[in-house]
Image (cartoon, rainbow, N blue to C red; front, side, top):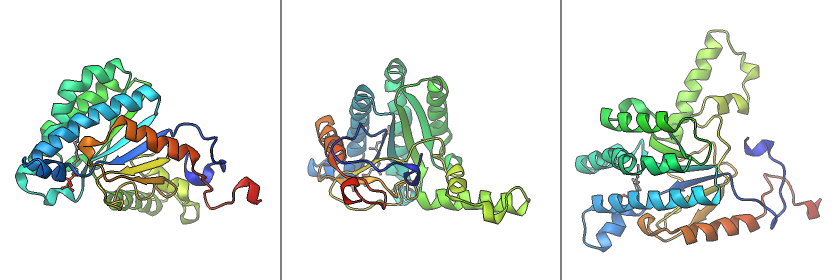
Length: 250
Ligand code: FPP
């Protein structure tokens, strides 16, 4: 499942990635460029989530994880936070029938406890209605933070140790994996960030240890299926060694 369990792969021969993670950045700047309010950028960003999800499903990607709201995004102006919290409901209200028709399964990662009731309700309905689907898994990271995820996992592990269910010497990387939101998912082979920023911003910190990173200056609302295809074809040419050597170097 994770990088250290993976076989070395030679460049040029690789299949499609199973899991693509995207930091959808640049909505605000997209709107500003057009003299529109920031929330319009988020609206257009949501429209692009539809296009990119359709495409990922059509080409046979198994997992698409989208950073929709981070644990740090609460510090934005109140109207922007409210708008972002409305988006999952708007998106799913309009798009759920197509997701179902496309056999897409919706799941979320992140701390659902502090989300507004209407957001939780919209997402729970989509999760429930798509739970048996077997195509693309569309993962919304909502109130997600990589450090928060690790702290929660560490607390659960400490609890298991303190109640005698787990011995300290039995704690392994697989133990940590079991206590993350993403347990049961493969690691993202590709991590994409749009809008010309070069940071992970607390996204999938543990899971992205061996991800191939892709950056583009394109703002998220304008990121196209063609640009995604181009990144995938670059990914297929990259050599992934997971700390080892290429076969020809051995
Ligand atoms: C970062 O752009 C983007 C976000 C904080 C929100 C991302 C959300 C979406 C793209 C829509 C999500 C859709 C669904 C269906 C949940 P920014 O606002 O930081 O842009 P800036 O850096 O240009 O200001």
